[in-house]
Image (cartoon, rainbow, N blue to C red):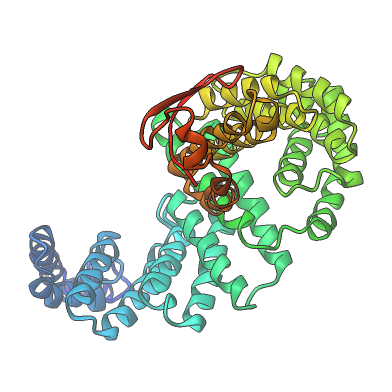
Length: 443
């Protein structure tokens, strides 16, 4: 009887041991070999010797899938390294399998679970295949958007940037709709704003980069027409007409898209100013009246925005520039230049401010001096400003070059200069409120 009991206990032990040595156990089919092979590939990966790491890693991946998350993290390194060296598409296929098995066995991981892994899958699928294969790009986009949906504010900033970059490419190929694109823009803008507000100081830059990238792509995409934006934003306003964050978001988008003549913008701008009469709220009203060509009111609210605005706020340069435009339209050239220079103090690379000063000079030319030579000399300093504009801001180069081409033929002639004893290359002072020194050159 005792032997039977001992035998039965032994069989139970063996049964338990056999059950433990399966794919479903942490150490897989052979615990000793799993640990050994994991140690081998880990050392090779540290040396970036991915080729020799591959056999040991493959054993753990196939025979002990539950062993550790590191199998998938290091597997990603190995496949990326091997693909980089060989360009063999089989390594991309294996990389996608890694993400699938990562999700299967470690999808519930607190930090690096399903949402994170599927984001990595989309990110690398696009990098490795999506740039040249639109169908792969669409597949990658699906993974990326699902990751953002699952991760929320835990989404890595690089994933957010990549998602919108892919969306931008798909939009150009008519593979996503304008509504989808605008909706994603709104979500990622909100994500970036919250990240900037909530993240530790050392991490804020990453979220600011997301905001800059997403905004640049969106406003260059050609989908930000007023009708589309209002159709998308009106329901948000109707749902939360007094929510400050919603009002600010709507106002910012409509203003950047130059949709300040819309009824929705007027509603939002007025509510914002009532709730929080900040510099930005005053600027919203200024742009509202600008579109209505009520320039006295525009000027009033621009002055308020400037008074309330901080010199640390990049938007204050825009306030000064807009006021300079108003002054120029009223032929108040001294004030136009003054405000443009204030804008340049805050943003030295504001090419449009240099163009405005050049235009102010050119508009004043007939009033400067006593004769044709004096009038024409003003075009020297005007062109100087256009040249400076494209030097500091290449985005205005086309406009600057057109203006240079328009005004250069109006330089003084050599005959006119002869009677003033002015020769090419000498320094010439253009006085009055212009007060600039330039170099003589002739038409």
